[in-house]
Length: 307
Length: 273
Image (cartoon, rainbow over all chains, first blue to last red; front, side, top):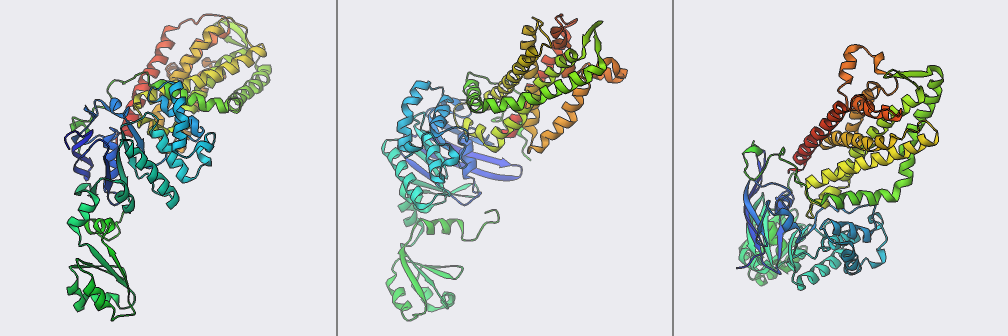
């Protein structure tokens, strides 16, 4: 990656005694979608806030487009589009007015913004809602309006903080489709998410973060290959937990338990599946290992106190 | 604890304001919202001050008759009108810079959205300050119109009173933004109104001449911004020039400059995450 457009080096953020982000480094190449996945409280949003110059790091640097934060924060933000976790749409304005007013914050002329509004609304599938206020929109529509608003200045890089949290599957798929269109246009995206299917579908590269640290980095498929056996057999039903200490254990490379379900990770599932057939009361699910398995392996299965 | 002062990346919250032309789109945003609600908002803003004026001015005025100001006898309604318009400027500016600015800053997160664009916090605070002053001027203008219609004063010097009242609005916007920066919720503003603004109303010579007050209270009163506003505006209503203008202008300007500076520093602190 010779010519990154966005680079974060050694970011540290402390609140009192607690270190929220610790030695965070990453780069984003032109046209790349970089995903940041991690449990709640892992430091994802704090990292994004430091990227925007809104939170002041205790150490480290953020550079973008050959400019550096916080000195050139306004020049950098002129080329960024941001969708934050919480919608900050203006409730008193219609969709079209929201775009117009937001464009002015970039110093854009009214005529230029007005020219762009129809295509932005169309991109967000909100053409018929041009005169509706955010209060009249569904959750998915609001998020798409936030995305359209972030595009008003035709940014080179988008920072999206959990853009699909709280959306139903239809709205989520529409959002993904739109983000893929933007990537095809050559825009770069930094995306935080809780959804592994979203990360796998959109992101060229992933950072897994936990407790403020980067614990893994790579392309989704590579990460799965690197950290996991290719096959998973989930076993549940009465008596499943007893399998942990049975000879079946030797047929898997690794065994994990979560609740009432036993997870066998293996390179070859056939002998295990054959052995399980003698226990018809057990239900089994045989599937390839996925990002969710990776995520849970790296960050643990237990629920966090602050989650 | 890591002290922010030890961090070279973290400049002092007391540094000079970093202002560019980008306060204007923020001001314009507030103007566009208000334009949608201007008429109901106007009724709300001027109905109460006018009720005070009519009830007290004509009601009390009949009992009080004339009041002596700088050796001149004036009708009580004129005395009251010239003071209460300063109070209206103060209330309108304070209300906007507290409740409305807090809604935009904290509840709607409008400021957060704006700061994702190339507009810094300093420009937002300046825009909010000027916006609250503008709204106060709008209210004051409407009340002045009604006072003219009631024939309370036809002094040509009201044309001078108008920009002076804008200055009063600016002063109280700046001070109110300090409390906006400190607020955790709307309840906090009740303290500001009941502990600061309401007592000041009674100690600034709006309803009765300051000569009625004990010397100690009068001495304090001389330093209150509202007293100094009234000192400037009342003579103009009487078609006279203020006997002294430099001191009140300096007192108001000091409150404005210090208020804005403190408000900006505390707002920066609030947003420095």
